[in-house]
Length: 225
Image (cartoon, rainbow, N blue to C red; front, side, top):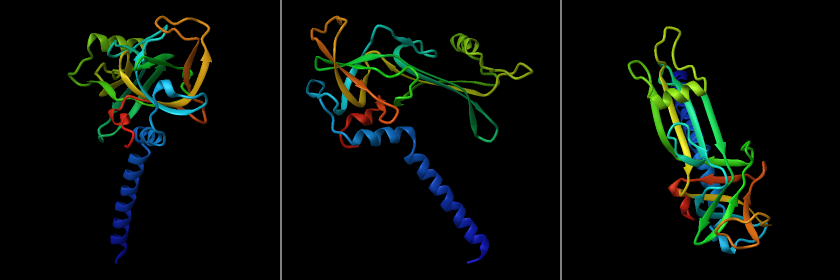
């Protein structure tokens, strides 16, 4: 086998390994693999300090977010802007991620999700909801222009032409069903919650070493993935 053939085979093998690794270590697959390690539990049967996987519908807390592109009320959003280049590649020029404390409900039982605002204790995969693009002869809508202006995104060239930009948004909306993997903590309830008549409440938490996992991916609602 000559050197050129060996190099060609090695190149194909290297590319194949890169593709497999990219798939295996993608955020979605990392989250889904973590969820397979724990069998789902009903909220009413959770024990203190138990590692649990639970499913429930999102209930708003005392404060909610507004997703910047869709203007939907939510408890979490992630927005990313990428600039496309002529080689079918792209680079991220802006990203923003925010989350609030919220509750989930399942069969009349409740739990509080309490991530840190800096998101260092959270790993999430949220399905993309919104996608927009701008470019030559493709102007931004008024809502998108407002987003560009308030985030100070350089959306035009020095000559005033639109850059080839792609805007993507993912969010967890009020009423949406999600899967959560976390450590359970039963805590005394100091401030009453409307519609909740118990003295303690379940909180689902994470740490930097044992992160809170959140996803709305439909595949996550199966115990065997």
